[in-house]
Image (spheres, rainbow, N blue to C red):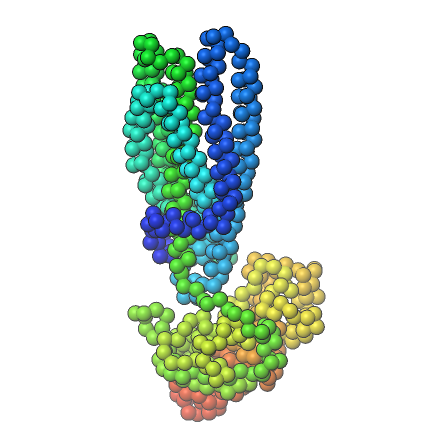
Length: 596
């Protein structure tokens, strides 16, 4: 089975400097908490450093017959205090790590919801979701534990080396020789961990993409008996994640065991050399014992350093994927205009729309969808856009909403270039009904007031009656507060379409953009009723309709015929039947007129 990866964001790996800079940006707001955690870790490390020296003193006192009770009490106090301080520091770091993850997720979600439509269409939603969930989780360890582990491990390592030098320089030389040899081998392993982790995270993103694909067309999958094929597709991505995860685990195991190997080899070397020095009388046996204790003490700081580097490699992979999202193009955050959604009609009346020589294509290299499109809608009334598929009708709405930016010419609303409008002002004046009439998971009330959160109960009841939804509310067990299911799964297609229209009307828009397919699943009675509602709304609001069924717009005030990205003709139904051959053919095909 072909299981090629889905297209994702621009995956340009960050340099080490850029990665460190990005990590510092996440940690900086929590620097004092991280510093407290580091201080606690150092206090715990200091307690450990004192134990070998105390042991040496204890052995020396035993040899001379002196009392050791005071030393034992002091050691016990140091161990208990160090453990308590380390436990508190660990809690502080865990809490800080969760805060870092929360901040990263909030930042990502805020950015994803401001993505330009072109970026959103280019990237599978499942991949974006995996970056918010899976990738940010990797920041937990690298942003706090790795920082503290590296700092405390380095300090403890240096302090232990100093103490070992104080005890015996020759044995220190033997120890460092072994540690450097093993450390060099570990350094070769770290890049492999980074590569394996990044591939594993990409595969996790593919799993999310595959699942999102299936759940987005769940009924189609079942009706096509495609469960087995789709399961195999998801399993293939899961196997890739497993394979790269195992590879990462393998190299992490190698790196993780290297510290113990280094200490064990150093122990054997020190035991051999130190035993000879004790036998020759160059050092007392208490010095050898203390040195060996410091050697075993080195296991923890060396392990901390290795873990810190491993976590850094994992975090670097996650930071690169998160940074790729942060490079995506977003809309400029909307500034507050003072006009609340739902208040537009009361403030300024119906909006006028004018296109002046507008040209547009989705990306460079693709054919133009609009070629110098010009038309004018003076305000109020219904204007319909008709024409063959691919003529550019729906793109008119997308440009008005500024989902895309025109490549040439100007789009004017109320005589003002929409580039001069803030997005909040522009979109608060528009009611937009999409082709697939999306309904969100939640209650019926939440869906109705989604675009007009300040709508009153009276306004809701009025819209329900106008869209013939009042009978639906009466049937639902909890009325308006009944959950409608994922994507409105508990509703019929016609009910979802009426909810989408009611949602737009409840906003009291100055400009209503309505796609003809938004009423395609309604029965004749409900469609006729909604057509009357739209006609009533058109008396006080500018209504633009993209029509594929001409029967829905024969009574429109003006009809704009589009073909191959241009405006072909403008007029009423009767005028266009008489004057425009393409429109006459469309009307005849749909049995609205005799074939000419």
